[in-house]
Image (cartoon, rainbow, N blue to C red; front, side):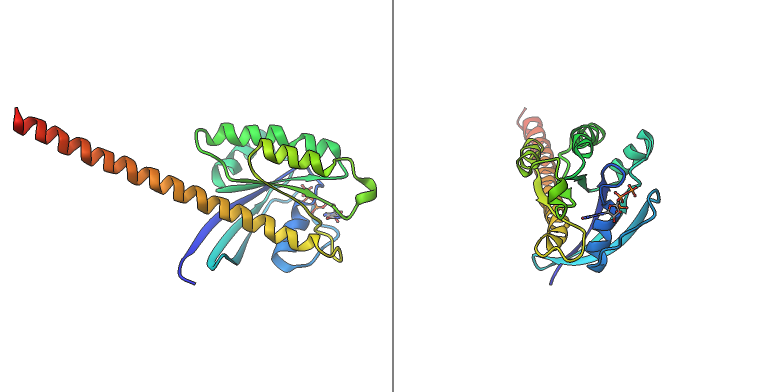
Length: 203
Ligand SMILES: Nc1nc2c(ncn2[C@@H]2O[C@H](COP(=O)(O)OP(=O)(O)OP(=O)(O)O)[C@@H](O)[C@H]2O)c(=O)[nH]1
């Protein structure tokens, strides 16, 4: 494993969608039923993603922050996990405005995002169809996962890590694109300077 990179991840979503439970699932592979509902916390987590060590700093937001706090978190993060609860339609409706705010705060940069529909174990109480999640993710041009932070739901628990890993990949892809365009613009400057010199010499 050659390189290692740092990625700051912010987990956003309405209070009670399961942000803390998802982060705990990622960090410990466990599910904890009750968590302090209002505290905001940061965690460190290392993972090998496609043969690269990635060190994630994860900010689990409180879900009830004011606009100023939200904007501060949006400036801090490299990538964002937008979470809704598949059994709570209004938490799904919160996602689009949240995404617009991130775009606004980070303009003109593209913002790496993943969309997560949590509590997939509660199929009987579902209020948001999988296709609706897929459509929203397509609109936001980001990856989409339905998962459950809840222990014992075979299949969906592993998806939690996959969602965070995919976000790190997207951050990495964006950094590569931005690095290239920075290099291109500095080459353009050198070319312009040489052209200027040549014009002066020949005149
Ligand atoms: N069945 C089920 N319950 C879940 C799941 N994830 C979280 N919960 C429950 O949902 C409630 C809220 O979970 P939290 O992780 O505290 O949610 P949060 O989004 O961090 O909430 P705030 O900190 O208030 O913003 C808790 O009772 C959890 O046990 C899940 O995947 N399935």
